[in-house]
Image 1 (tube, helix red, strand yellow):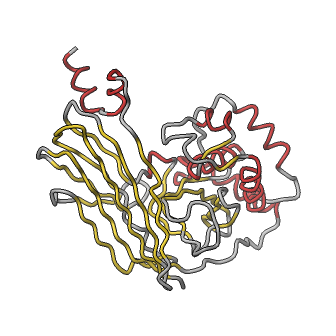
Image 2: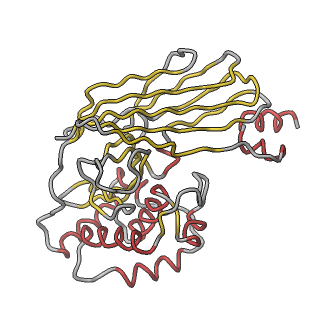
Length: 317
């Protein structure tokens, strides 16, 4: 059972003093039979009080406000976690029985959110791909694994070409992106064949295995398979999720699982840096500065960065 030390730093830098920074954090690792959290230390600029609750999807979530003027906000999370291998993806059912039981899930309340596809202009093109990739002799589990392999083979892993605000249609046109983009396309494909699917945020810790996403925040999808439960599929690395993946949160999409999001009061813009390092038991460490968002040069674009200011000016108008 591998033991990982993960250090996740989120740093907001402001062009001038801002205040009333209100934030939501989803940096609390999942605690279950496959993932043991040995230690978790969380440090935030200004030492605000963090209110922790469990959200609709069962994620441990924190909220805090930094009311005083500041030009920097740092959220520093250090965890020590032990992961365990799950059961191999095997249902023990015939494909026909799997599909019959999958069909019954549509009437079960807990799966409704994970079955509804989001708006997608290229849905006809995606349905055509599904018709070509889906084989009648395969059940939902094998089909989900095949879909993950299709994305891995047909989409290029390329950092910087998309952002967290990129739409599924943009990703589809580019046929490129990073882990969160690959996960979103897989969600669409699974939901279109009525297999419940959810987005997962976390980290990947492959220890020199050359897997994409090492030393950074990572994302993948989980498909609900009758007789098996939730099975994690990582299309970025074309693999079934195992003990190299550390889970933080689940939801319908990235927005439900964003590690940090918030707003602030002030006229100044900001930039964002996210740094993740993973230390293994042998002392080997991987570090990655995996996201830098520069402030826009056009002042008119400030509204897209500071939703609090946008709201205030809408109220005044």
